[in-house]
Image (cartoon, rainbow, N blue to C red; front, side):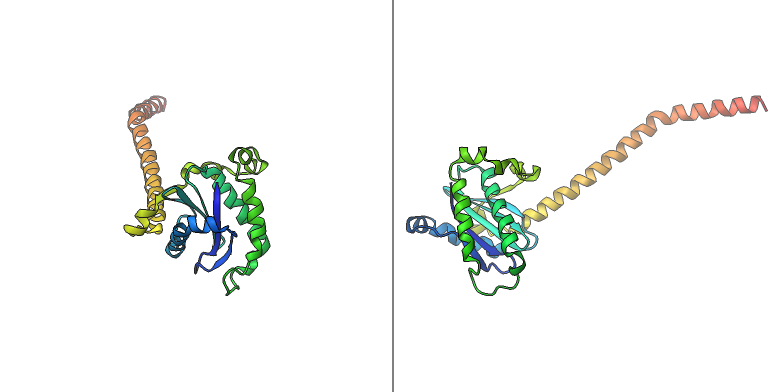
Length: 217
C-alpha cells in the first residue's frame, strides 16, 4: 500500500507538494519521513533516476524527472512495479500542470493543490489486484516494466555507513563501460580467430592463382 508521497525540487530539496496524511500515518511514518529528507539531501545530478531504499517494514521508492523528485513510502510487500507506475503517473501530470514553474518558485509547497490528484491516484493503487488489472499498467514502457533493473539499497547503509547515492550511478557507468570493453574485446578475438582459421586457406588459394596465371602467361 502507498502510505505517503512527497515531491521536491531535486536541485535544492525544496518541497513542492505532499500528500495530506492523517494523524496516525504521520506518527507511524515520522521517522521514515525524516529519512526521506536525508535522501533528498544526498541526491545529486549523478544519482540513480529510479531507486528503492528499504527501511524496516517500509520502502522508499523515488523517481527523478526534469529536476523533480517524486518519492513515495510504501509497505515493503507492495509491488515495486505498482510503486513506480504510481510515481510515473504523478510525474506526467505534475510536469503537465506545473513543469514550467518548478524552477521559479521560492516558497515550500507552492503546488499544494496537487494533493487532489495524488490522493485520487493513490486510491487507485491501494488494491494491488485492481491496480494490476488497470489500464494504467498497460501503458507502461519496457523500462518501467523491467523493475529488476531498478537498484535497491538499505537505509541503514546510507545513514550509518554514509554510502553515497552517486556511487550507484558511478558503479552503473563503470559496469556499462566494462561491458562495452568486453564486447569490443570479444569482437576482436572473434576476428583474430577467424583470421587464424582461414588465413592458411587464403594463402594456399593465392599461391594456386599465381601458379595458374604464371602457367598461362
